[in-house]
Image 1 (cartoon, rainbow, N blue to C red):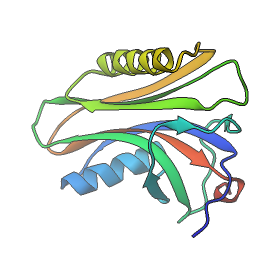
Image 2: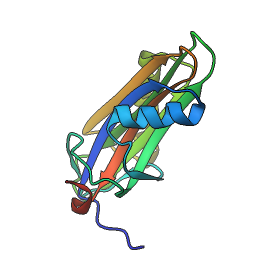
Image 3: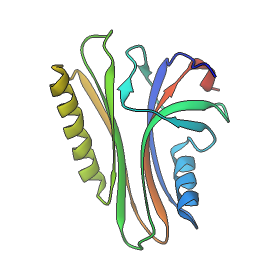
Length: 160
């Protein structure tokens, strides 16, 4: 299978309950609007040519490179969080960086962790951050819950 060029990137998040950990994860994907596509987990580079967009309607069954974080728990009352974030430099030819986080944490803790990781990754590269976006969600578990956050890397063919 050949990869299509990434033209867009969109962040999303969702949380949900399920009867099993996998169902909770699937339901969180549905809540995030990415439950009917195939995610291919990728590491943390935002292509320089990708335009940042709101999550569009996606073609069911599309195979989409995605940087994501998910935290599932079966401990009633526990708070879990997931977050993603991206940052870009002023140079439009340079790639950006994506970071992911998941833990037993609040949304605010997850957001702070992402900002710290993005700042460190840019410092290590000797780059200055032009813009940054963080998306986080927390979930208080009832029986089996999942918090999920994702950056989808989309081709034009993935969008309906």
